[in-house]
Length: 384
Image 1 (cartoon, helix red, strand yellow):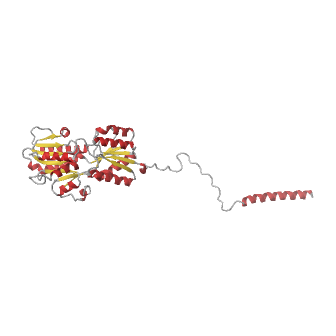
Image 2: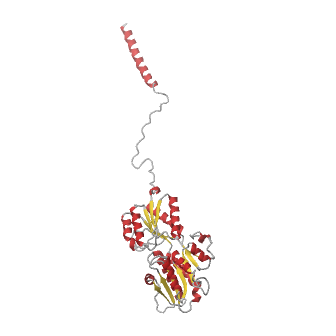
Image 3: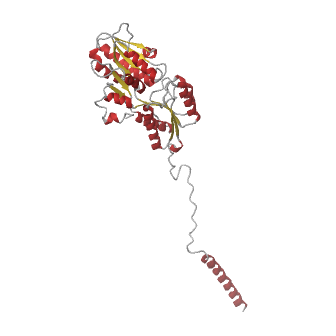
């Protein structure tokens, strides 16, 4: 009997144990997902490929652009290109320039302000390299990329200016000389004077446009059996390749006003027109070309023809375009200012991202009444 009771008790205990096990399993809801096994932690350098490092946060980039001025339509065209490309790339830009292209001190202050803004990069069209050498050295010391535009920044501290976006101004001046020489070469009989009107003797672009014209005109004249010399402004006389010759029959006479002032440049033009042997005039930028155009209001001798003083300009603007169309100017050289502004921002963006940048020649063209409406030229003119 005792054995039967013991067997019954053992059987009951085993049944209870089995029911308890089944009960705990049944309490887990059927739709509860099974716990995921923890993923293995990949060894360093294994597993997922690392995300490619971004080239740079364009939205956080800011470029300070210090031009030579804002008063001429040329600079407004450069500014247009700068702002258009900056909007496309999503970067911030601040475009400034002095009130006058002779106000070097104001530009130096603007460059100081640009540095204080702690920009990602700086674009600079220097009125005077000597005046901004300390600021350029500061840029170099603080790893702020600088790109020159419109003109180079000759003799800047080594490594401070990474590249330049500009017309090859010397070559452009030479193109103007070739065209003017073709128009007057058959009229060189005895002593003749070629007037070069330049707004300054400090900025690289203006100086090189003048020197390019002087050197090429002298070269062509000498090749045709004439003698040539340079007189006038000391900078142009000393830097020209033209051999200074006493008694030369082709006189290249360079006039530079004491400051960049329209009235003073007009005086220079009038003074040249007062010379009995004057044969041609060349204005090496918008400011100087407009002085020639203004002088034409009172000097009917300026124009195209065998009995006229042949005149040529550089850049464009409404007054110069009209003068070319009306035959007051033989022609003029156009740059590509909007493209220059665009290329400047592209170069600043590349430099800010650590890419190698190089000089960019933004080009030039000679335009006349005959080809001015050619789209390749018309699209580069401002002031239309």
